[in-house]
Length: 88
Image (cartoon, rainbow, N blue to C red; front, side, top):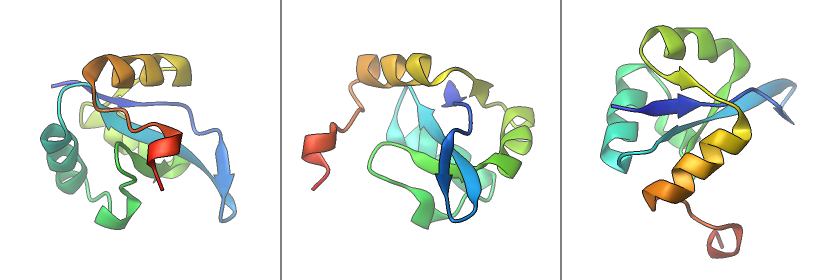
């Protein structure tokens, strides 16, 4: 299982947010998210948006912290990436 989380760099709603992805499958990602109380509404086609304060708990549960470029590279390589132009 390889679930990845990047640095919380994205400001919204008065907090910083990170991305939680799997480089294996969406099933793996959803299973991990559900087991760690990440709300389903946080899912955005190929990732979950997670608040900064959730990251330590996700890492303890097995998510691997990586830089944003590494996360995107692995997501693209997995074939799970949804491009920006395909999000609409």
